[in-house]
Length: 232
Image 1: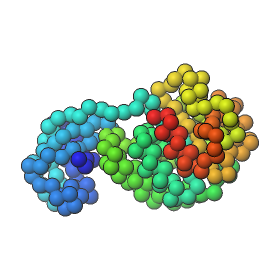
Image 2 (image 1 turned 120 degrees about the vertical axis):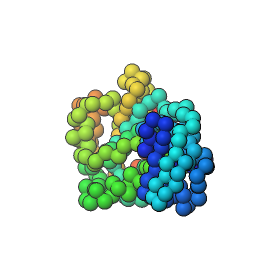
Image 3 (image 1 turned 180 degrees about the vertical axis):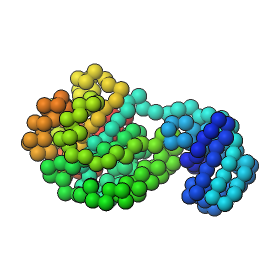
Image 4 (image 1 turned 30 degrees about the horizontal axis):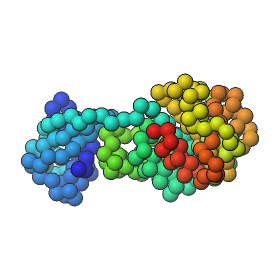
């Protein structure tokens, strides 16, 4: 059953604007219909529509649905190679369960993340939301503002792994064990040209462990999806 993003207060839900138009004009729901609503923060309910107005739908909650979430909170810190591949990563990795996305600029980045960020971010957050609705996910991942790799690495705020094409021995599973099986993790995925030597040195200085994603060299967008699938 499709689900709809709603403002949930006590025993009622409210859907407005574009989401309300989709619910009534596209899906053709009407008063009395039972639908699934979610708040974008992890709560999901079956609910009954009580009132339909132009650009506004109100109803009552019927039953809370059990939460479904990975034990690992994963932040994907990646260097996009193009708009299309970035959007594919946001879509697929949202479906896999990634909790937050942090686009980064690296020494070999080719795609300009910083140019017209606000315009890009609005579209990309909509892609994330659409993926949540498609895969029946109740929490919406966070899309963070882009930053330079070195500045993010220097924060040392979360246990981290670096997918490194020259690493042949240490796997993601090894990395998780080495970090003490953390409940939250950041994984770094580099650009199409790979990590520069100085970036690998910086990662080591800040305790970021290099790991392999397998015997083959993957495209950057494939590496993002592979890492998320293996970790979650």
